[in-house]
Image (cartoon, rainbow, N blue to C red; front, side):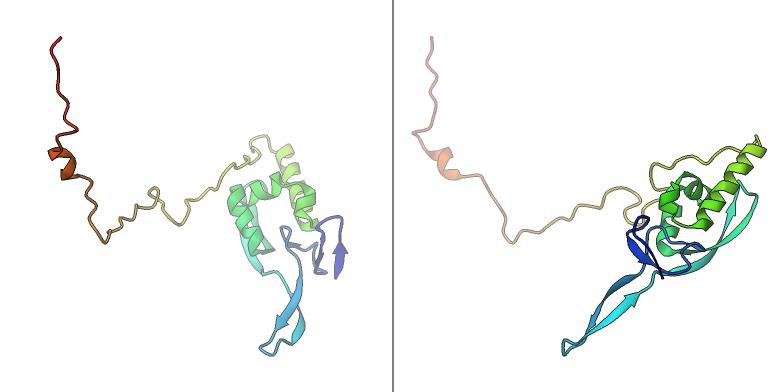
Length: 165
C-alpha cells in the first residue's frame, strides 16, 4: 500500500498508478457482531475493467477503473472529456496523466480534431420523473369542510341598509 496524503488524503492500494480511482481508496472500519465483538476490516473500492473508444486517440482503450470513475465519465460527457478536462491532481494516477498527454499530442498533430467540451450538467436523463415533476398526490379528507354558515345570512344585525343622499 502507498500512502499519498498530499494527493488523495487516503490510503490507496499499491496499483494506484495503473487504475483510475477518481478519489476513492481503501476504507477502514470494524464489523460488529451480535455480541458486539469488533473485528478490523478493510473495504476495497469496486474496480472494474471497461473499454472506451477514444475519439482523440482513434482507438479503443481498455482501462481498470472504479464505478465512481464510471459515473464521473458519464457526468463529464464521455471518456475523452473526463480525461482531458480533469486536472492531474484529481486524476491521481500515471495512467490518467499519460492518457491526457497522448490526447494533447494527438490534438497538436491533427488540426481536424477538437478538444472535448466541458460538460456543465448530466448528459443523460435522470431515471426518475423524466416527463416533469411528480404528480401531486390528492388526499381524501375524512370529513367534508363546509365554510358556509347559515347563521350569518339570517341574522338581522348584520344587514346593511342604504340611505338615500
